[in-house]
Length: 257
Image 1 (tube, rainbow, N blue to C red):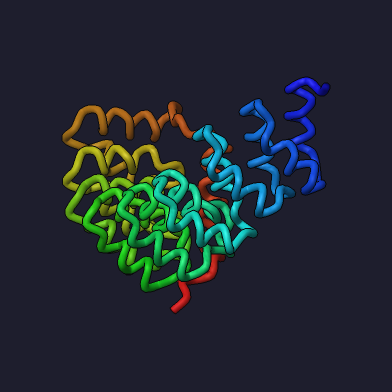
Image 2 (cartoon, rainbow, N blue to C red):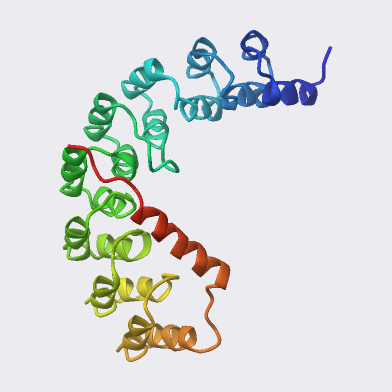
């Protein structure tokens, strides 16, 4: 009889759906987890694991739905909120893809804030994004800043949002925007926390640091002065990565509709 380690390795590397199906009922959580994570598992197997007794197995199965439209519909109606949130994250790292519109609409209306926040980051539908930009929960509005399709006008609404947490998220998580002019305004924001966030944004303009170096808040001023000197905590690799992310976002397609 194979050891658990051998079975887990097989579940990770197997390409045969029948083999994976047989491993999906293995007594070991680590084996079932590996099956749930394997793209070669068929829909029937993933559907089984969506009801696994172990939460991590269920969540992993819900994170393996990119090519499974029928199961996307199923999970969008799940009573388990973290499965719905996992579904909403499906194309978080793929700017050229999004869930089907009807699935997005179901997730947009979700009662779980985490689900709405994640669809705010990944939706490619203009009307859905506009709805989430006006969400009553600041965490959802804040998440909108990370959507690479956002326009300058949409980002302006986040930059001027009534809640400092949303403005800070715009400063920290926006890719294509906020642009330099918006970042300079955020560097003079009424909130100490927003100004602090600008200091630690890797690709902020030097002029923003110069503004905050004269900040009334001692911690902000000290941090900005350190960044202007030789104590910049952001390495060249971090800064270059941030700039590459901005360039990638600038090439992303806009919203549909």
